[in-house]
Amino acid sequence: MRETEGLGDSFVFLSDIGGEFASQYAGVSGGTFNAATYVIDKEGKIAYRYNDGDFTKRPPAQEVLEAVKKVVG
Image (cartoon, rainbow, N blue to C red; front, top):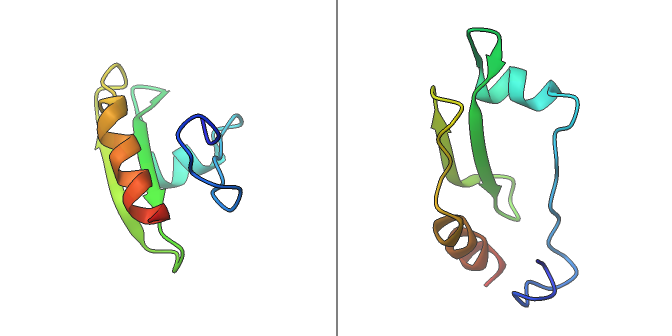
């Protein structure tokens, strides 16, 4: 995705396979991690956040991609 969208090598995508970040920042509802998406800028500030108590809901991919592109410049 980084290459196809021209985001450059300096942009990092992370995945929380073990759920450590999710338990701290997204929360847990009924024993299931909440779905959350964060875009963090170069200064470490949250530029975009999506967190819904319903784990089946996700933000539109285009919306997240636009937030990433704003951060990358």
